Length: 303
Image (cartoon, rainbow, N blue to C red; front, side):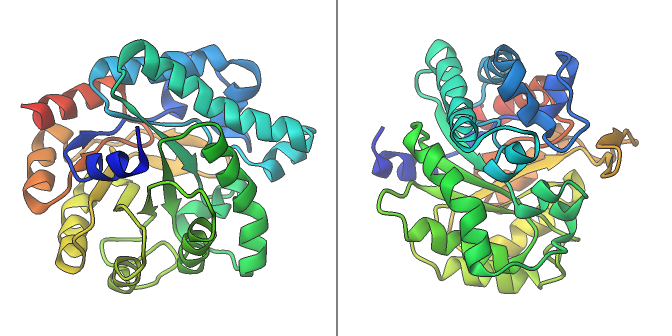
């Protein structure tokens, strides 16, 4: 599919997939360390394929690759050399593409780039509590972005970004590439008015709306009840496609890399019609969501 065709599809109603780590845990993959779901790239690629396949069968139009936590620096800390790390990142795209080819020839593959905070593995992807220079962000992100493009991603999903300076750096890194792909930026928020690092969401969204070549603004890995006010905020400022993929509201513990289940106030069945009516058009789930949740979303979007 051409880049322009992908850009046009991102303006339509599309079903995004759900949690990768949650489903890998069910298949026996170790996820409670610094590599999290990226462990499966090393020793259980078949499990990744099974997860992607389950989401395509549930009705997903877009698969996000299992590369959120996969980066050269994280792999290096685990004794994996540079070239092997790049190949592992590329393999995340190849596995997703195989599942797409087997179950939904029209599906899109979104190469996933997580924040620097995820590499820190201390919960900083929710707080944005770090400061790097543009050069440092470039050193951290650029090779991975190039690897995801070279492996054949249809677009890039910039996930869970909690730090405004990192948002700016990522936009520049991608826009400076000679062979850039369509992409969205999905934010990690402190609440319905602030980015994870405390920056006013209005400021972030307005800045993103003024940049060239961005194909969507989103929010992910926040509880379901936060989505409607954030969608309203984005739509008040921007005409770009809106991407939302919340978690159900469970509590994450950064030290143990585990979750505590809490009673869920809202459900996808209740809220997806509201998000659609307010202007969101790409909807899926983040941590702790399942293929059953995605099937529920698909039923609403496609009917």
